[in-house]
Amino acid sequence: EPQPWPEEEEDWHALHETLVKRVEESDSSSSSNQAKDYLPQLVFYGDSITEGWNGTSFGNLPGKHRMWTTGEDESIRHVFANAFGDKSDWGERALEPPLVLGISGSRTYDFIWRVVNGEFPISSLLGKAEEIDNNNDDDDVFPIEQLERIYILLMGTNNLGGGMLPEPTLKGMDAAGRTILQMHEKHFPNTPAAMLFSEILPRKDDFRAVKMCPPRCKNVETLE
Image (cartoon, rainbow, N blue to C red; front, side, top):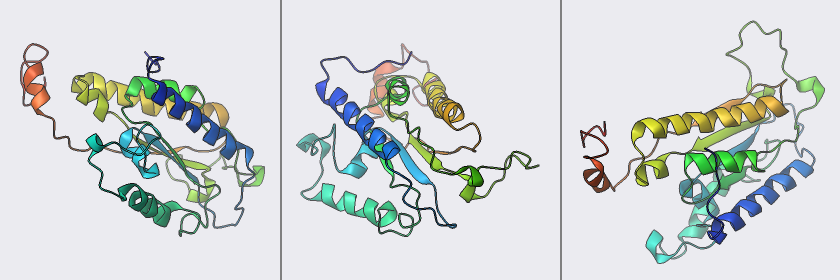
């Protein structure tokens, strides 16, 4: 069931409101690149790993528990800017600057709530002339210039870290991806959607599984 974090988690709610404003600002700006060889806007969705591209944790410089070294936040922002910033190869051709919409600790159910409560860009970046030809015989293949945005999603690790078993975690990941595609279909019915869903990265807290299995599962190796 999609739901936000409790109201007492003020940093989470404050960051969500900040991200909503960033989306609104992106939506209100006119498309800055109408070159024929343009590239889509990139929308990064996720948890702390995604938020880390901003060099923050819950909107602030990471605390000591995050084990970041001095100046690491600036280094990470520099890496991201080199890859996708305004002066990067991608950024110079992108319809709009990338959106980094990550909140530390997010799980699939609060992520879905975030998306349907303001963290989804709804402005059209392409003119009618660039809209996809719906008579294309191959619906699975289309050139990148027919895309307005590419959604990049990294989600699910905090479900596992919070004690959720793999099967319901996968169901939550599937629901998260489908929510993005449904929102796209609602607002951009005449343009194709593209989404990159990252695999869950390796974790180092498998010791938690020993405490869960049993009773929550029978096999500590497979978590089944």
